[in-house]
Image (cartoon, rainbow, N blue to C red; front, top):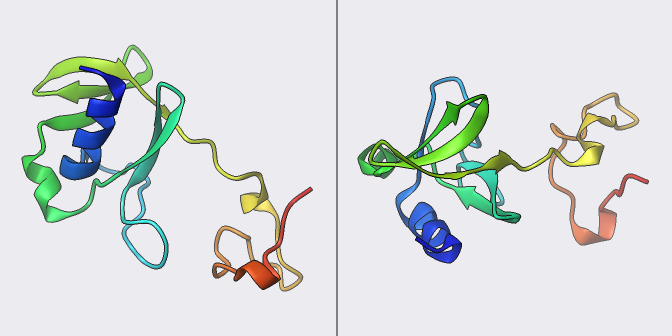
Length: 112
């Protein structure tokens, strides 16, 4: 299966994760899910929606590396998207940037 086909299927069907994995549950911005790299391409994969329980895809550890499985068979290695460098910075009110509300373009803050 070509990476483009895999990405398309994942964005439509989602992937099951091991319990306890950190993933986005919803809110403003991208859909719920987790971000992974497939062949160097960042992909937002739904993983909390009810329909994901029926997905043939799952992301599990294999040999210490995250791997995408389809119907129990390994498809390809995947990697987590690295966290943005500014996530651990703090606002003047001592709030972690990861927790601060999304900024508008006019007030966006960029780490140097």
